[in-house]
Length: 170
Image (cartoon, rainbow, N blue to C red):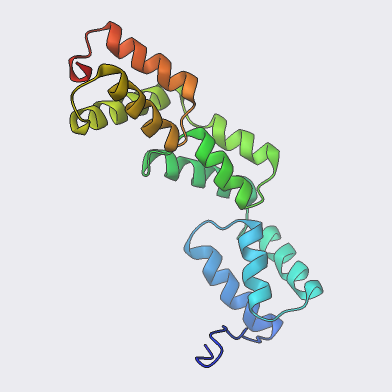
């Protein structure tokens, strides 16, 4: 980094060295084609070299967009407890194709998805301020929506909880 200007200098690597480094980078964890392409450009390669190396990575299965989308969606849902909306937006930032995006979102089981909403609501309702039940209801709703869950589904789960004597809201 050039400290006088604050700009990061791009490393100029040979295509062979860049291929080796990017293979190690891709082997470490799943990467999107967009991230890989950006990283190759950061190595100072020209567009023809980047596309050639990316084609090699795809052919040798270092980069697989579908596998990346499935791993990303699964991880963000199971570990971070993100909803489908947030996962979809993040996958779009990675420029994942619509086919892979749909497949990744479909890989999240509906039962597990609603169970996650229930768990989030249970935990959040314990820490929510007691008082006006409507304020608590909307606070819980907004919390789940901010995590990327569909508002209609969250309302459905919340109403189900209220109808089955959800005492934390009272």
